[in-house]
Length: 361
Image (tube, rainbow, N blue to C red; front, top):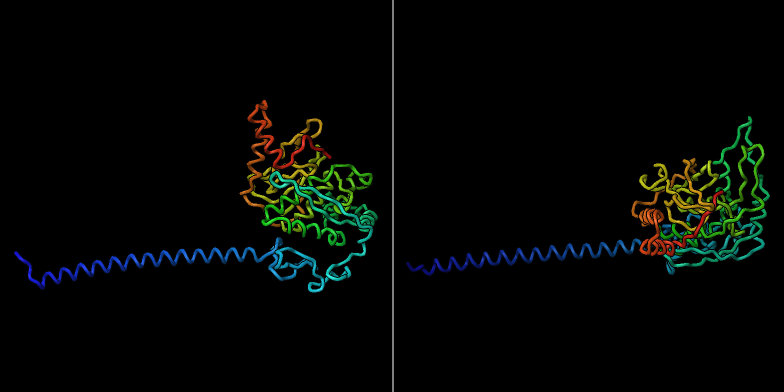
């Protein structure tokens, strides 16, 4: 039976409506997709801009650092001295854009080495004998009333918190901030700088009578000036740097072995004895969390360390590649070193600049 003209027109109209609905829906989907794409694109751009509007210490561009006279320079993205704008601490003297300590006399320049992912770099730094002379003449003992004996922690806190010393160590910290684009690498640089300072016993290291046989160790600045130190002294220098960077720090004292390492706050599963602090050997280049290294004479650390917390700052996260590398190198040490194992071992050795043996004490 043939359809009437009105019925045919009605069917054509329905098809046209259906077609328009489909086309409109497709257009709507495309618009939504483009909107989402544009939103994500511009949001990522805004995020990138937010990230690049800060210097290495977290200061916003064109603002003064909390530590005078440092300023976050937008033209370079670096921290610079700008005392003319940011001022100086009360006990320092403003000279141009710098703040000068009365102990900034007897200047010399040292060259420090560090290794980051197998690439060796250098950092030049000015140190002053005037500060060394001031620190070396400070009272070595700590005396309390009522016959109370000072603890190891008391000496640690005293050595890393000296305010005069801090002002001449801050320029090194600012160089570290300026040397990498991310916080993880700044920590790695600080660790490597200290590890690559020579291990050497100073003639100023002595036993303090009446202080439970505790050793007097030089201040961090003295270690830097002499470019040498023992385990406790180098650990104190690294503790200062990481503490000022805002991280949780603890000293790990192995009494039976008479050895000291440093701990940085980290995930429990990677920490020493579930303490929440990861092992860092400071006597020579090593991998963070690798506490199975061999020391001179084939000795190892077997005792449980005393954990001396000196800073309850932030922690490094669970994504550090050092965790896996420490496990790898520990596995490579065991058994016979076949060709494949030796190749993998040498890769890690080059990546971190590892040394043959480390020193206790």
